[in-house]
Every structure is written in C-alpha cells, then in structure tokens.
Amino acid sequence: MKLLASLRSLASAVFEQARVENETEEELRAHVESRAGDLQRRGLTRAEAERRARIEFGSHEKFKEECREARGGFWLETVGSDIRYGLRMLGRSPGFTAVAVLTLALGIGVNTTLFTAFDSLALKPLPVNDPDRIVRFSAGLRAERQARRTPFPILSI
Image 1 (cartoon, rainbow, N blue to C red):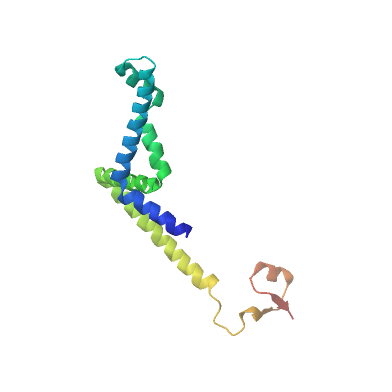
Image 2 (tube, rainbow, N blue to C red):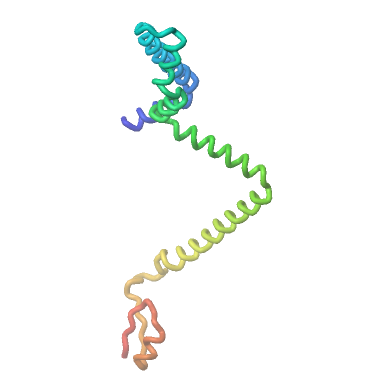
C-alpha cells in the first residue's frame, strides 16, 4: 500500500507540476502580504511594510526549492535536467564523445567476454556424474607434487 501511495505522489508531482507551482507561489505571496498587513497596522507605510515583510520572509526561490524537494519527485526532475545537460555537452565535443563511447563499448565487451569465460570454466558444474569425487592419482616425489599444484586432492600410491 505504501508503494502505491508513493507512486501516486510521484505521478502527481510530475503531471501536476505547473498547478502545484502556481499554488505554492500564491501561498508564498499570501504570507508576505499577511505580514505586510501586520506591519502596516503597526504604523508603517504600505511600501515600507511590504519591503520589510519580503526581507523578513527571505527569498521566494529558496522556499519554492524547499517545497519542491519536500513534495517528492524532485529527484526525477533533477535526473532529467542532468541527462539533458550531459547530452548537450557530448554534442558540443564530438571527438570526446566518440572516444567515450568507444571506451565504454570496449570495456563492456571485455567484461562480458571475461565473465562468459569465467562462468563456463568455474561456475558451471563439470559434465560428469559426481564432480565432487574427482581425484587425481599421482606417484612420485613430494617436491614434484608441490610443483604441480592442482585444485584436486592428490592421493599418492
């Protein structure tokens, strides 16, 4: 149930962003006007009361940013703007873009090849009936056995 509520909140933040921004702006303006009215009743002129109310209240943009962060879905907007910025920067320098893409392709290809080899050699079971019972028999000197270290148990005869 919590996941459904989170998804609903995220969808609301994304699709109703303009309405919520307007409501936030109106609410902030109402707070400043209310404070200006209080200051005007104390004897200040309207212009001076509005100026002091704006100073006391602080930056509208700062509060709007805090409201966006608290509302949720802000990270989605940030990721989107970061991706757009990254694509613009890659478009400005095609040489760097080509080198970066080739480096990533080479790295992914080598990683895939190595993992495939490791998977087939080390992770998949051996194609025998009882792989746990594989034993290597050896006869000879102890030094010779140590020189040929193997992952299989060695039984001397």
